Length: 252
Image 1 (cartoon, rainbow, N blue to C red):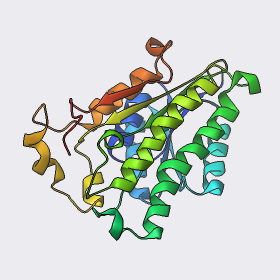
Image 2: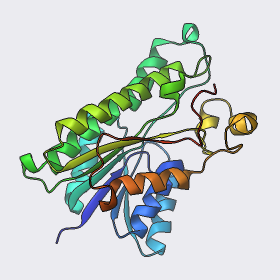
Image 3: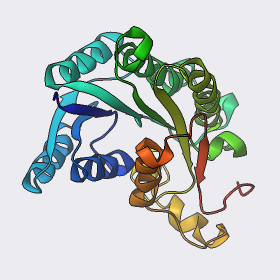
């Protein structure tokens, strides 16, 4: 039987890396996609292989169609694609909307929305039973910000993640009869490097006392939710958006 391949975009760090480790530990062959940090991707692949798993690192910017096509071609060379985790995402420095440049907004939507659509398109082309595939699972990474709006900080990012919520439901219904389940997780405040990339490296510490559970979540906690959505235990779950936010629903 051909190897069952799962692509994890933005898989070299944070939530993506945790997902890769857990998928590989469960026997999946993992394609670790990264945009720029080859050292982190190579270290993760070495770690997975040392633990007895199978992983391959592939560079690619998900907002670039040529890179996405190459990413999926690499998966085809390895085996049969049965899963996609649309994890790649970016945010920019905290700003009001009236301070944002067109370049910033274009990049935010290109990576977070268009990139997820391009990857989902290629995954469906391979996994849909209508198109000769064997089925599979897509899990999109949303954000609690899609409900909160992130005023004064990341309204563009929040809006992009709102698009992911809508995409998840629409695509799930579109391919429900084709052997593909499509779901999403909406993380809240998770202790990863993304806060530093947004110019607020101490954001977790600032917000911790205001969170319902008085702590941030971990990448592993989000990854566990993703793995459940991809598993046979979730075989009747599609179009679901699972909040992994520690109860954070109305706090800015």
